[in-house]
Length: 219
Image 1 (cartoon, helix red, strand yellow):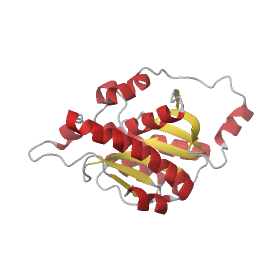
Image 2 (cartoon, helix red, strand yellow):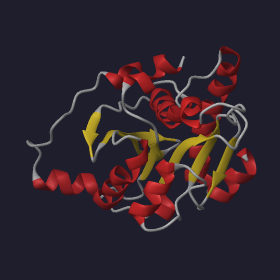
Image 3 (cartoon, one colour):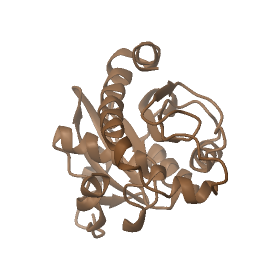
């Protein structure tokens, strides 16, 4: 299921904006009231559908549900613009590998001149939550997640909304890397499909109703 969600992403090749005028580029970066929704993961197809790539799966689900093509390559990410829940958004999947996600996020924040505390949403996996459980927060520490740690370092602060998707605690005796880079068992797939659906709705709620209202509804 998650491989199918990822399928269109793996084949994307890098584009170019060399032929765009300076005025077009300036208009592109000055998007009033635009949100940037970032899903975290690793870029190679061998990581598609893994627990650590649930952020990418969420972006793909958002794109599919709202007719958005995530087929541009800028700011070290695959990106696509569209409308989600009546709000202008840019969907992004950093291609830096998880531990360097902040490089891409910082470029996106700077280029589009957004306030991370108000206009950035980051979606990622959380092994401290049961599979399929969502947890929304307006800010906070990395909690041991290296992708979030790198984003905090590059932004210089912890104040940006995030949607954590539970992937379950690693079984006793397992290596953590092997666990997060593993795929969901068949019995968990329906649960994770619903989690992706709820994550999409959570992003809409954050944009339209605010983080606190979204927390009350989805946490």
